Length: 328
Image (cartoon, rainbow, N blue to C red; front, side):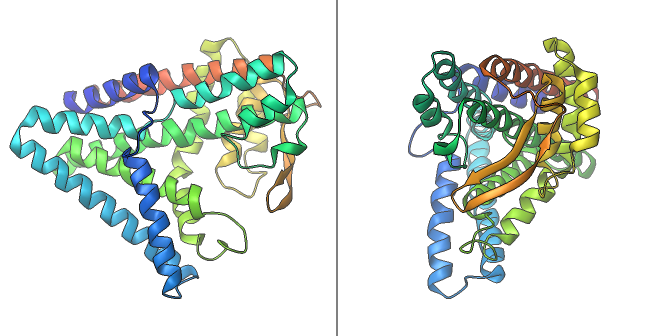
């Protein structure tokens, strides 16, 4: 369990210190390229519906885990410190916290200087909506919403699956680190699949169904646990944790997604703003329910406070996980 705690701690520390490394052979980018090639192959074979989407999920998950397990076991047998370094590298690659905050900072600066076109350009790098129709309030809402959603998807869910895999490995007498990282990697594969094909558009409505459902399942528990983590993060950040919890319990199921509104509604309540509402996507307008209370829209100062909430909540989640591992 000490080795498990060390891997997740240093993986997190590397992420918050250096961010996500940008290079061609990043494991998640390789997975994304494989998804693109597999989609083309399946569609070429005429598998454009749910069957093809299910095969995409199955083959991507199995091939990713096979490659990781083969490489890790080989490196461990060759030289154990080399194997441990590889495991740390995989853990580091599966976490994405600093890059999220780094991408949001230029949005804040552009809004503070009144440069709306630049703010739209910057927020377009991290959201999938049509940004050309956004005013400064719309850009601010988009920034806070992506911080909330990606706190779960980019940090809390990977840590949760790592922790669950490690605990199950100890119960079943398996290799704790390899099993924990296999669970973490499986989540990242599912998340990547959802981000690439899990859309409700004519092209992906059926083909992306399995990817979207897998992402819903794997984020189901972390999204609900996020309310506890964010409560303490808001308390540390000097926000309003009780308001966040009250709004979250009221608004968390207002959206079609079973998971997305949990963190978003907590952010809305703890910041004292409203989020979501009608959003223009490339495929058309989507009338999402408003989250929060009142008619106060967030501004650049609220984006900064939301980023602070993400940072403190992330540290709290990490320390809670390490404590659990060491205690067990």
